[in-house]
Figure 1 (cartoon, rainbow, N blue to C red):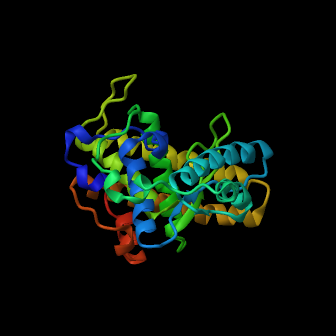
Figure 2 (tube, one colour):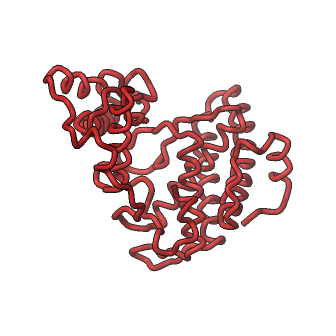
Figure 3 (cartoon, one colour):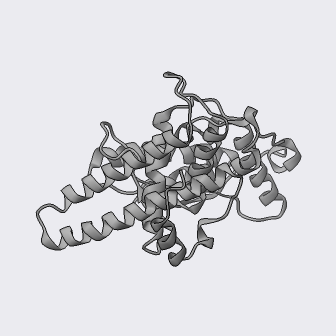
Length: 282
């Protein structure tokens, strides 16, 4: 979606992780329209994925479960009958709201069955533009591309790793990677300013965020492996992948600032090795 409005200065979006479908009218209408089309076609309307991954920390799991429950209760009220989970650990939490609605005997109204009831006009959601939000995008991109270099199309990522608070890791995939890179590039294109500091986004700022995040990730991984020789060897190989991911993330962002929406999947591993040896794209 961001790719279609990238050049429009009136369509600069707020921090990705603060956007809520439930409270963003046009996005909610996309979901409702999907339900209406499915009902018209006698197909099962299936909602979004619960992306939270399980943690060894029970408190983290409780926070994730509360968020999943809230999302799935909303989806069930819109007429969805099922949803996805990134991990079986959260399956019951995600399923219960749909089962409760089905058991109640509730059915969608006639209005909910008509796609014309839900017009879709793209507009920026409410919310702030912050460098902290761009930093989360930067960390997500580096982590995601590192997984891609291992042949993984999806990866559990905590974009707030190492920061205070409770924040479950989320399953990120190519679609969410494209959201993060598109949002980052959009902020560069329009010199979007942090709501509090007034600092504008540009190539140098984004490169700094990516650099700081890759260094922090490598530091954490080395610390995790400090007491195990085999883990230290893997951490060294992992650090090399993260450095390649940093270079590739810069190239991906630069492409988008040039309105070149080339997919990550179009790059071979040889292409990525070449990019890793070239001057920085930002």
